[in-house]
Length: 297
Length: 290
Image 1: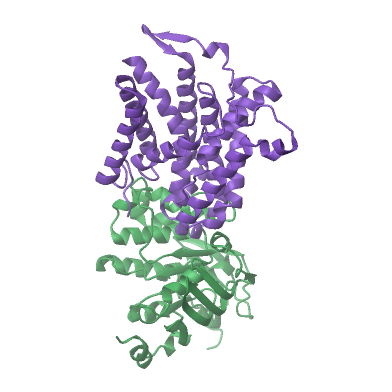
Image 2 (image 1 turned 180 degrees about the vertical axis):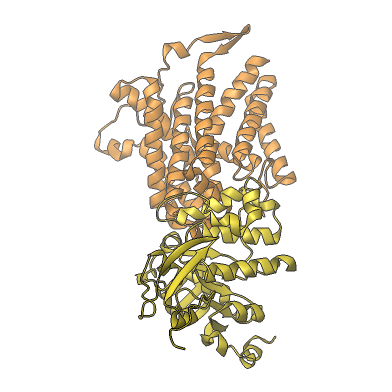
């Protein structure tokens, strides 16, 4: 039982890393970023490429993926999203387009395949990332054997969530973000550079997604469509947890991740997926503002 | 008689003071804030620098041929307005004549605006909202718009983002003006009464150390017992701290009491303006009677 819960916890962790970025950007900017899953995928490819080209270890890929994904997110925000603030449907479509662009760019190795040039690690094929030996075994805690790699995922997530919480509640940047989430116009009237803070927030959320990608690369093959389903899962967490609520996002990730693991073990993956969807629909119907939403004035 | 008597005058009216006094002492919270002689040249004070702030002679907000829009709806039409430094200028008129839009336009919060806005010689016309706040304009919106799940402290500190020195501190005079707020700094803003929220919105604006304060119907929807408090605070901010105030207000009695000048709006244009003494009952009946 504990091992199942532990699998659920590791699923929740990845879900949380993906959802945190979405929750902040959706909360602060009202932007549904459909390319968020592709940023996860880009993070996974950073792990693949840094292993092949830089010969660095898996651990080095974590900060590298954070930076690369943050840069990618920043570029998307500046080029596309910042021009479409306040137009939810337009951003949804535009970022969906961006997501296809990124996916195809990886698949076609940035178009170089047409010239007969190949970049090792990219392309349509499935890539594997070598997980360090110390993370491959099992750890015995109180008589229960737990997968070390899953433990590592949980640990990294706890650290990054704590960091996010610290930034949001103990720094002036975090206060600016929270003010923008609640009242962007008044935030601007109080001297907050909303555009700059939004770009930073977007980049930070993307960086977290990049780290989530590295984590995923460790237990499943990396392919260009790795992130496609992640954006849906991420939004289910955001909707369930409630807008602009960090606690809500954390709780909802835990709830959905654990439910998924428990049902999957008891029955099968497909049914688990169905149960998750049913639960989310139930939340949307009964409590549209989310389970942990702050009260609007 | 000339020169034979020494007079000590306690007075708010700076015009009168300039006419009769040779020396001036400014008190604030029981301490001498500034002291100096009166210059012959009106508006060019000698003595300590802080005196110029109290007299507020340097700041003027100048709006010229302002057009302002929400989407396709054209609200202000070629509006021009001068806000003299250190004075309270009231904007009056019926509902829906563009008073709130005027303040929002000054803060660049409407969808689109044309025309020139100059603060103290600095052209703000092309600047976004946060730079206008940093230039010294603070805004207390209609309905207060404090942040409900921020504490009182956080709400006030939010105003500090507009400070040019980057400091994030609660101004000490806030305790004197709003004792309730400083005694309950950790209370969420959403739990406050309407009047307390209004005080909080004013405190937030003051935390930016502004030159000009924009107040949009500060007494709307507030219990009568607190209205008087807030009116007194607004007058003190101008008379004692030398803050330039633009006040949107429906209560003509308070407008006459507090303001130096006025502008009457109708259909997004100014139909009358001038010193407050020229705000006659006839004008009020003509443009404000429902």
